[in-house]
Image (cartoon, rainbow, N blue to C red; front, side, top):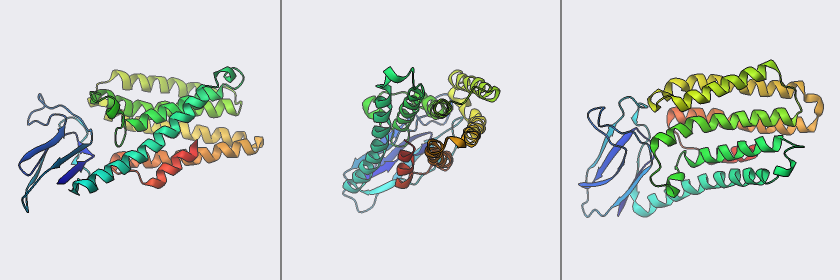
Length: 277
């Protein structure tokens, strides 16, 4: 038996192997009217008795993210391909489980939210980031919800990272007991407007909001570093947060690069992200 695994095709596909329809995602078409975008991972196995056979991949994108076959498919003995898929899922599950456990743990401390309100926002940071990783890469959330709409998933991929960063800003500000400044109010208003635009705009326009969102997130990171610099007199607690911000920044930079270049996450990035929490 031979297996084929394709993780990143932009933005719809039908895969044929050994004269059989292996699988596909979305609805490729020669016209935009019949085209349905989707980017779920594709995996399939065929029992081929021939020494050689053709692999045909039909791809269509139209007004969605361009690129087509942006990552080389994995082909080989079925058991080897299954093993590679399971390892990738296990890596994603390790990150998701850690983030969700921390999020639930701090959410369970709700009795202390009045005295230590930063616990609420750190919980929101962990939960939103955990949910993001469940709809990214291997898209493990689709295993729980097989009929998950790609349009909803694509919205979540844009909204959740920004919500996690805003939650982290609130956590840092409240943890350091920093006053509410005009810059913070402006960032908050811009963040609300940006999230509302992501919710209101059709998915075809989301890419137009990608770079403004990246610019806004860079301003947020500079605001966080400014907070830490102004409150450096608080000693060790600032250095602990600075270490977390450093690892979060590395993860954020790689996440943006990975999305543009359709790369897989190496294992050391997973460890880097876990060091944030």
